[in-house]
Length: 161
Ligand code: CUA
Image (cartoon, rainbow, N blue to C red; front, top):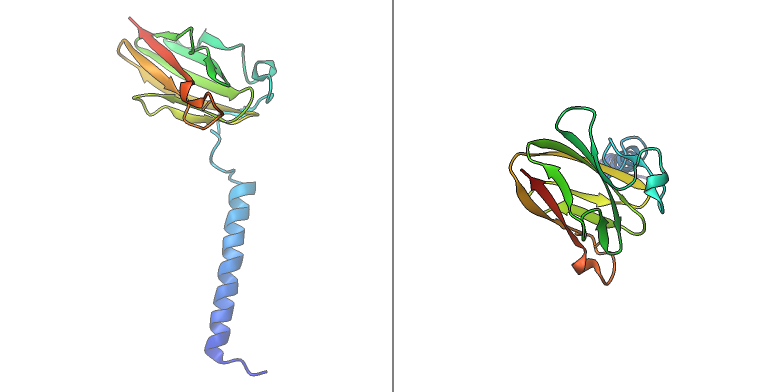
């Protein structure tokens, strides 16, 4: 069978691109991770994050450095614990690391008006750190559809003087 020289060149080029694409996707999934989970996070028990080594009972904890706080938040249909009902309270002038996990389905954790916005993937811990300088009240929002109560899933973060 006679294959034209240019045809052969294009055939090889096309095959090369397929190999490249497959390689890129495989590398992204296997080596670099999907990029959706914070590298500082980790695995947690998908139904009881607080039972995991990398998670604590939901609440606000003083950090190892002055003015640093760790806030462990469980997301569940359809509440933030703490955050819904009982607000999360941190003092102004503090650096806060939020550790977020889900006890059921995929939720979002957004502190409205800031760039804090992460997914709470069942079985994974998301970690995000931010500074809060001024006393202010922020809304907490779930921005991943999680069921019929999704639109009511909200909470409060109080930065107190
Ligand atoms: Cu939780 Cu939407």
